[in-house]
Length: 176
Length: 140
Image (cartoon, rainbow over all chains, first blue to last red; front, top):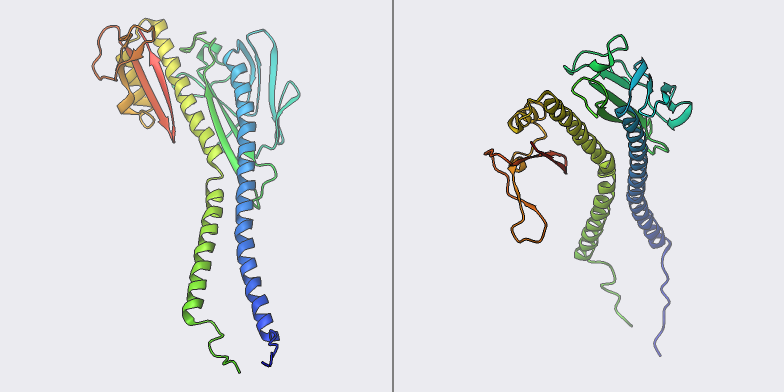
């Protein structure tokens, strides 16, 4: 009869195995974390883009048909739309409101040289103000600076979206 | 009694295991970094779209202004587009096209673009930004 010596695993071998598994687990989990962060970052980008698209589409539709402007500031604009309704768009803190209804939130601050609304005359360079006639208003440039909601990146990321639109009812090369 | 030799791993086996693990880890890393790197695609696409729409707005206004002034020529539109939006113009797909119903099924298909103007042709302007492109037809 053969002696059946039962060889177990030594403590050293066990510790070694646990250590190797631990190192592997850390490696795998850290790459999973990168993937998860990538997903959250993409989601934040898509959400931000969608918010910008909605706000810009809404503003562009209304502004293209404007028939009069009473105030034209860099962060606020009051105009009359083609149905004769007065519409006030205002940037306060980090939100834009249209007639006191929320249009979009989570805006970043505007550093010097940038603004929500920029008004131009037909040469594309001269600023337009309400002192000029409406016929000279050639284009309105809307710049949205949005921070991402639920941003996975520390410190946050700001996306800038710019839409240029030419009001149709003014005389500066614009016709309905 | 059984001889106990050869119970450990050979060097080859260990090297093989390390190489396989490294390959697996680098693949996982590649997938993860792709999801990070391409996360902003939606934003970039929308910015490309805005760039094209802004250019479309500008060219349309010029076109309508020229019509109203009675001075519109398609050559003038081409010149305006090239002068103001040169970076966006897709030259290979910008030019004069004519439409014809060759097989008589009621569907008019455009000819290939040509640089030569002739009366009755339309002007196709193709603008590209990123991986998006926008074709605009101008007629007299």
